[in-house]
Image (tube, rainbow, N blue to C red; front, side):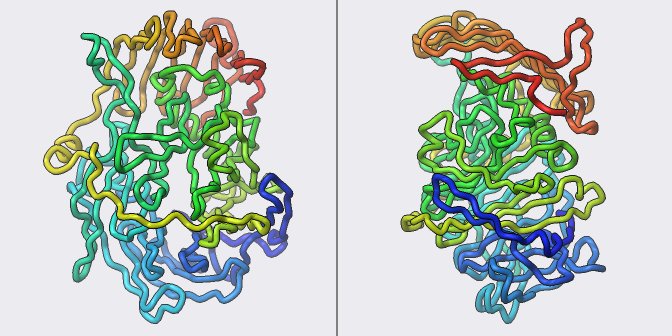
Amino acid sequence: MTEGTLAATDERETETRDSAFGRIELSTVPLPDGVQLASATYLPSGDVFVLFRRAGDHDDWFRVGIVRDDGTDFREILSGAIPQSPTANGIRHMPFSDGRRVLLGDYVLEATPDLGTATTVELLPVEYPWDLTSDPLTSHHWSEIIVSPDDRHIAWTILRTDMSAVVALGRLERGADRYTIEEPAIISSREVVVPDPERDGWFRIRPMLGGEVKQFVRGGSALSSVGDGGSALTDSVIQSLTSEHIEPITRTPGYDETTILSPDERLGIVMTSRASRGTDPRFLGLVPRPHAQLVTMDLAWVLYVYAVDGVRRFRPGNIGPVLIDIERSVTEPGYQGVPLNSADASWVYVSPMSWHPDGTRAMWMEQRRGSGEGGHPELRIRVARLPEHAPAAAVPVVATPGIPPYAVTGEDARERLRRRIQVVPSGRIAGARSGHLEFERSSDGHGTWSAFSRYVDFSDDGRTVYNGYERSSGSMATGAVYEADLVAEGEASGEMRLRATWSGVQQGARLLFGTAEDGRPQSFGSARFGDTVARVEDLVE
């Protein structure tokens, strides 16, 4: 996490929008002079937890403040060093429901009697299992962390040096001077391609468990994650902890990432590029085709840099957030929701997002585009109030399942972490009703890959048949290329005839429109589904 400066006073104006949710009031939380804003989230009390610095504080020095979301009653309750492990993803702040503790990643902050009236504050270290902090195959022993509503469990995402990720679940136990994670379990899939039990030598696609964990939902019996919803691009999904069921909760064809659900789980705020037509790679997902993730999953890093990191740094556009009705988002493929991004296009969303416990207010952070290049971004806290929305009661808390039925535990979990992921290099997948899909994949485990799929009269439902191919290849250093020439015929009609070429990460994953070696443009063409068309040329560089 990097320190920032508070937005100037004249940026605190309130904006009102009318929408399907009624009136939406958008405002910026004012903070005292001298606060170099780092990050903020709602607490179970409705107060705001602010992690910040002041001028002269060194890199490991952090302060904690508690404030109301109208900027009043600011109290500083902690000032001190919080050393950061080299394999931790900075500092996070995930409140417990007890109102007195916050998980910071490698520490738990404990306040007595509670965060709002703290007279003493203590930091206790968290010991992660499986020797993750010294594991040579682990690049980040946590990249995301979340606390269950029962205050007993945490889930976290582990990043691996082979470019894969592992999601784990465990029970957080307090000792005399530290917390430990007991009964740790891996709750993510290792490979999306598995042998087909009905056809020797063939394969099938299994639902991909895991992703970036974002929130315990369903009272603590499920997780909201950025994962595989079965479409070409990542989606927000809900993963059950009692079965292998995965439910996509965002279904737009473009780039959707984090969704944070309201206390009654009827609403959500989504990190997404759907309101940024110039940077939303919707051409990749417009045609809903089976098993597209075989080719597009390795594009995740380039799409993140293009649609998110590049927009924060230099590229015009936004990444939300967008307010959604969860039921409509799940059931209506074309549902868009209401954008909450600033009317001043120089401000861009950054994490985290949270909901006030009354269910009528949501909070997130914004950064002025380009201000983070020197490590000191200009940041502000934004709030959306829904004064005409009548929330239901919060979802009741249930005991989080400690060991889901599909979990990998004990020595089996250790053994899985000892091995790099092995990609199935080639094979065939049968359509449930007709035809097949042929695939080829390769990866060096360090960000260089190639993937190819060919549909041959492929149909799972007997109503739509797919023919043609799509492929991708690239590396983090040199960039990436995606090409498609395929047709969907039948009840659902569509086609993809396009190429998109991006530069490497260091160049900001710029979409290239020069001439390729074959004499054609590096990026061209379109995708069509029904009467809707998405053109590659409509995206900005």
